[in-house]
View 1 (cartoon, rainbow, N blue to C red):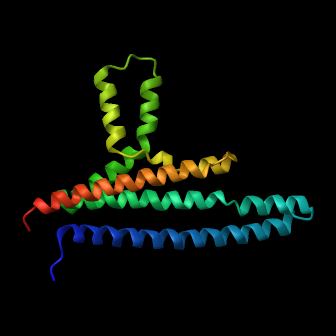
View 2: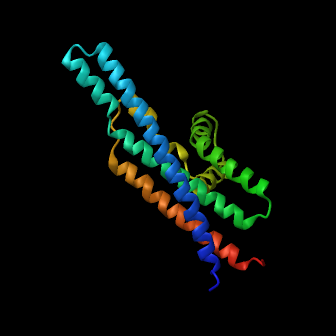
View 3: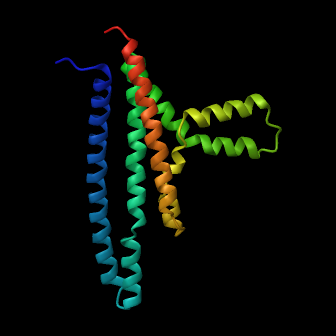
Length: 189
Protein backbone atom coordinates (compact mmCIF):
# COMPACT_ATOMS: atom_id res chain seq x y z
CA UNK A 1 0.00 0.00 0.00
CA UNK A 2 1.37 3.45 -0.81
CA UNK A 3 2.51 5.79 1.95
CA UNK A 4 0.67 8.99 2.59
CA UNK A 5 2.88 12.04 2.45
CA UNK A 6 2.47 12.89 6.13
CA UNK A 7 3.55 9.32 6.96
CA UNK A 8 6.69 9.85 4.91
CA UNK A 9 7.46 13.07 6.82
CA UNK A 10 6.76 11.37 10.16
CA UNK A 11 8.97 8.41 9.26
CA UNK A 12 11.78 10.66 8.08
CA UNK A 13 11.63 12.66 11.31
CA UNK A 14 11.33 9.63 13.60
CA UNK A 15 14.32 8.00 11.88
CA UNK A 16 16.40 11.11 12.48
CA UNK A 17 15.16 11.48 16.07
CA UNK A 18 15.91 7.84 16.94
CA UNK A 19 19.39 8.08 15.40
CA UNK A 20 20.12 11.27 17.33
CA UNK A 21 18.73 9.72 20.53
CA UNK A 22 21.01 6.71 20.15
CA UNK A 23 23.99 9.01 19.55
CA UNK A 24 23.18 11.09 22.63
CA UNK A 25 22.76 7.90 24.67
CA UNK A 26 26.10 6.46 23.54
CA UNK A 27 27.91 9.74 24.17
CA UNK A 28 26.26 10.07 27.59
CA UNK A 29 27.40 6.58 28.52
CA UNK A 30 30.93 7.43 27.38
CA UNK A 31 30.96 10.66 29.38
CA UNK A 32 29.49 8.82 32.39
CA UNK A 33 32.25 6.22 32.12
CA UNK A 34 34.96 8.87 31.96
CA UNK A 35 33.34 10.74 34.86
CA UNK A 36 33.24 7.54 36.93
CA UNK A 37 36.85 6.76 36.10
CA UNK A 38 37.97 10.29 37.03
CA UNK A 39 35.89 10.12 40.22
CA UNK A 40 37.65 6.90 41.22
CA UNK A 41 41.06 8.44 40.54
CA UNK A 42 40.24 11.63 42.44
CA UNK A 43 38.83 9.76 45.44
CA UNK A 44 41.94 7.54 45.51
CA UNK A 45 44.20 10.61 45.40
CA UNK A 46 42.24 13.09 47.59
CA UNK A 47 39.69 11.03 49.46
CA UNK A 48 41.46 10.01 52.66
CA UNK A 49 38.92 12.17 54.48
CA UNK A 50 35.42 10.60 54.16
CA UNK A 51 33.82 14.04 53.81
CA UNK A 52 36.06 14.87 50.83
CA UNK A 53 35.32 11.50 49.21
CA UNK A 54 31.58 12.05 49.71
CA UNK A 55 31.80 15.55 48.20
CA UNK A 56 33.66 14.21 45.14
CA UNK A 57 31.11 11.44 44.67
CA UNK A 58 28.21 13.87 45.06
CA UNK A 59 29.60 16.17 42.37
CA UNK A 60 30.47 13.34 39.98
CA UNK A 61 27.05 11.71 40.35
CA UNK A 62 25.01 14.90 40.12
CA UNK A 63 21.48 13.94 39.00
CA UNK A 64 21.08 17.34 37.36
CA UNK A 65 23.31 16.00 34.58
CA UNK A 66 20.32 13.90 33.48
CA UNK A 67 18.37 17.11 32.91
CA UNK A 68 21.21 18.46 30.79
CA UNK A 69 21.37 15.27 28.72
CA UNK A 70 17.58 15.31 28.27
CA UNK A 71 17.66 18.89 26.99
CA UNK A 72 20.56 18.13 24.63
CA UNK A 73 18.47 15.34 23.13
CA UNK A 74 15.39 17.55 22.91
CA UNK A 75 17.40 20.34 21.27
CA UNK A 76 18.67 17.89 18.66
CA UNK A 77 15.09 16.73 18.09
CA UNK A 78 14.09 20.34 17.39
CA UNK A 79 17.01 20.78 14.98
CA UNK A 80 15.98 17.55 13.22
CA UNK A 81 12.44 18.91 12.82
CA UNK A 82 13.85 22.12 11.35
CA UNK A 83 15.92 20.07 8.88
CA UNK A 84 12.91 17.97 7.88
CA UNK A 85 10.84 21.12 7.36
CA UNK A 86 13.47 22.71 5.12
CA UNK A 87 13.90 19.45 3.22
CA UNK A 88 10.25 19.65 2.17
CA UNK A 89 10.52 23.29 1.11
CA UNK A 90 13.78 23.08 -0.85
CA UNK A 91 15.22 20.74 -3.42
CA UNK A 92 18.87 21.58 -2.76
CA UNK A 93 20.63 19.69 0.02
CA UNK A 94 23.06 22.58 0.40
CA UNK A 95 20.15 24.96 1.00
CA UNK A 96 18.63 22.62 3.60
CA UNK A 97 21.94 22.33 5.45
CA UNK A 98 22.61 26.08 5.26
CA UNK A 99 19.14 27.05 6.50
CA UNK A 100 19.20 24.50 9.32
CA UNK A 101 22.63 25.77 10.37
CA UNK A 102 21.34 29.35 10.26
CA UNK A 103 18.39 28.50 12.50
CA UNK A 104 20.78 26.71 14.87
CA UNK A 105 23.13 29.70 15.04
CA UNK A 106 20.32 32.25 15.36
CA UNK A 107 18.77 30.11 18.09
CA UNK A 108 22.01 30.21 20.06
CA UNK A 109 22.72 33.89 19.49
CA UNK A 110 19.28 35.50 19.61
CA UNK A 111 19.11 35.97 23.38
CA UNK A 112 22.59 37.50 23.46
CA UNK A 113 21.77 39.80 20.54
CA UNK A 114 18.43 40.77 22.09
CA UNK A 115 20.06 41.61 25.43
CA UNK A 116 22.78 43.68 23.77
CA UNK A 117 20.30 45.48 21.57
CA UNK A 118 17.84 46.27 24.35
CA UNK A 119 20.47 47.14 26.98
CA UNK A 120 22.58 49.35 24.72
CA UNK A 121 20.75 52.42 25.97
CA UNK A 122 19.57 53.37 22.50
CA UNK A 123 15.91 53.88 21.77
CA UNK A 124 14.57 50.73 20.15
CA UNK A 125 12.05 51.55 17.45
CA UNK A 126 8.78 49.70 17.02
CA UNK A 127 10.06 48.07 13.80
CA UNK A 128 13.09 46.70 15.61
CA UNK A 129 10.93 45.40 18.45
CA UNK A 130 8.65 43.75 15.90
CA UNK A 131 11.67 42.15 14.22
CA UNK A 132 12.97 40.84 17.58
CA UNK A 133 9.53 39.47 18.43
CA UNK A 134 9.30 37.71 15.05
CA UNK A 135 12.73 36.11 15.48
CA UNK A 136 11.88 35.04 19.03
CA UNK A 137 8.59 33.56 17.80
CA UNK A 138 9.98 31.72 14.77
CA UNK A 139 13.33 30.50 16.12
CA UNK A 140 13.62 28.67 19.44
CA UNK A 141 16.01 30.15 21.99
CA UNK A 142 18.55 27.33 22.24
CA UNK A 143 20.15 28.92 25.31
CA UNK A 144 17.14 27.63 27.25
CA UNK A 145 18.42 24.11 26.53
CA UNK A 146 21.88 24.75 27.99
CA UNK A 147 21.96 23.73 31.65
CA UNK A 148 25.66 22.91 31.89
CA UNK A 149 26.66 26.42 33.04
CA UNK A 150 23.98 26.38 35.74
CA UNK A 151 25.06 22.93 36.94
CA UNK A 152 28.75 23.86 37.04
CA UNK A 153 27.92 27.05 38.96
CA UNK A 154 26.02 24.91 41.47
CA UNK A 155 22.72 26.67 40.82
CA UNK A 156 19.41 24.95 41.39
CA UNK A 157 17.93 23.56 38.18
CA UNK A 158 14.20 23.05 38.64
CA UNK A 159 12.60 20.09 36.86
CA UNK A 160 9.49 22.17 36.19
CA UNK A 161 11.46 24.58 33.99
CA UNK A 162 13.11 21.64 32.22
CA UNK A 163 9.71 20.10 31.56
CA UNK A 164 8.48 23.49 30.33
CA UNK A 165 11.26 23.57 27.74
CA UNK A 166 10.43 19.98 26.75
CA UNK A 167 6.74 20.88 26.36
CA UNK A 168 7.58 23.95 24.28
CA UNK A 169 9.82 21.78 22.11
CA UNK A 170 7.12 19.17 21.54
CA UNK A 171 4.71 21.88 20.39
CA UNK A 172 7.39 23.48 18.18
CA UNK A 173 8.23 20.10 16.61
CA UNK A 174 4.53 19.33 16.03
CA UNK A 175 3.99 22.69 14.32
CA UNK A 176 7.07 22.26 12.12
CA UNK A 177 6.16 18.72 11.10
CA UNK A 178 2.56 19.74 10.40
CA UNK A 179 3.80 22.62 8.25
CA UNK A 180 6.22 20.25 6.49
CA UNK A 181 3.37 17.83 5.80
CA UNK A 182 1.16 20.60 4.40
CA UNK A 183 3.95 21.89 2.16
CA UNK A 184 4.88 18.38 1.03
CA UNK A 185 1.22 17.58 0.29
CA UNK A 186 1.12 20.43 -2.21
CA UNK A 187 4.33 19.51 -4.02
CA UNK A 188 4.48 17.58 -7.25
CA UNK A 189 6.78 14.61 -7.07
